[in-house]
Length: 288
Ligand code: NAP
Image (cartoon, rainbow, N blue to C red; front, side, top):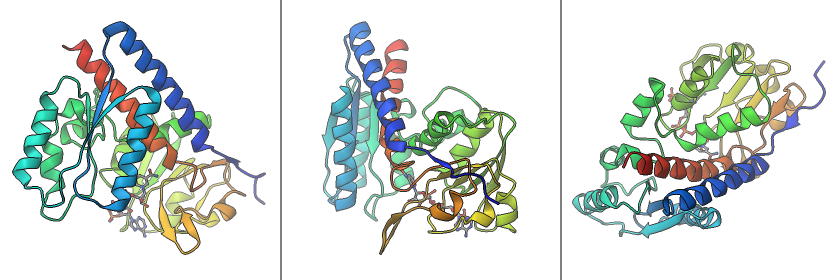
């Protein structure tokens, strides 16, 4: 017997709430310091999908009053030239956050470029210094998607303290930082990945289950404990459109709350980028 149908967590509405909060914080910063937070976006080359992502990020900045400074080096930009641009942005006091859109063309190493960004302007939270800060529970910039997952869990009134949270996926972008964030909220966290044995049995133990893999239909009803909160980070383009990692129709009869794809985690990512930019600006202004 399943529980009554899960409540569907509305990522668009939660993201709109975050954007509204950020707009208020921007106005406060302008009033207190006379400074508009600024985000530099760097798009290397002309990959159409990346161009759309960056355009959406810039539009979102404009909506909340964040200044954006766009740079579009050509696809064959030399490593030294891109490094020089990042160095200039690091030194520019009008730029509080730097977003280097990934992936980069093959001749450029994403790790090298990420390391060149000032950790205090690293609004994607990918610099090892920020990963270390997160691991040690220090103030820093957290990757946007996992930060958005925590917002969704809070919004759905999911108790994290003492709960068993299972995260499927261990990437530096999503899985690992999410594990740290859940741990910081006093969850008991299990990380699963491609070598995990008895994945279904482990997942069935979860009060909070997060799928961040990139495999349509990976999580079926047999992997979900009755009454669990299920967050689907997966984004998979299929012939039938955009789908997540969770079999939504099957799982909605077992979970207490569940995110849809699209309209769940996706909208949170840009909202958290805006939040990170304002956080970075505040810290830089306070530590000047
Ligand atoms: P990734 O770097 O490819 O990592 C995928 C993870 O899934 C790896 O840790 C991998 O394990 C694990 N995995 C692969 N097959 C598995 C299996 N059969 N069983 C259990 N675990 C398995 O991907 P990512 O960057 O973390 O992204 C994950 C998904 O989230 C993708 O669909 C991506 O598009 C989506 N995403 C969405 C957003 C958003 O805004 N909504 C943002 C970022 C990512 P190993 O480590 O052992 O290889």
